[in-house]
Image 1 (tube, helix red, strand yellow):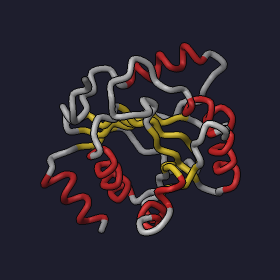
Image 2: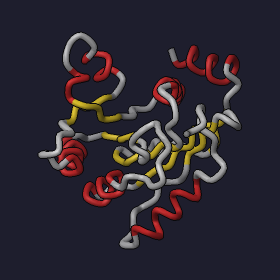
Image 3: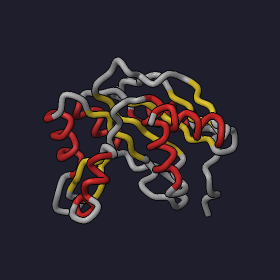
Image 4: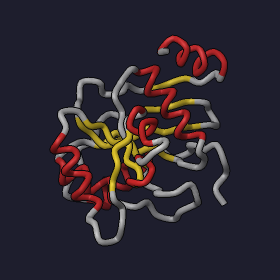
Length: 178
């Protein structure tokens, strides 16, 4: 399957990768930007297979019920109750604490629609779980997936977020955001 994924990604689609996936780390938060299309999920699955690495994501609890729950678990998903009464950050931190290996990929935009400001849950998850953040850009303009080096969140959230956002400057998503 890895060979097929490589063929599709590199030969058929003509994409490339830059940077290095931090295979030596068992736990970290991956922020993927921009998130403009449901194709991002398929691209992520393809990259995951090429790297042959365990990469996880969270999804609303109901996705993990029948008939498709097996698929979401098989692709690295972890169910989470995202209702207002639950502390989602703490729930995800508990997942980090309960697993030997957990690499959480998510979009700080929180939606495929245009946003002026990222949600900061990813940052608080990384700080509370005491794990680094890895930035991954899905640049459809250059047909490139780009990995950053792991970043340890500091006590200066504003400076950290500015640094993270600068990594994604000029990156173009699949669909233009309205």
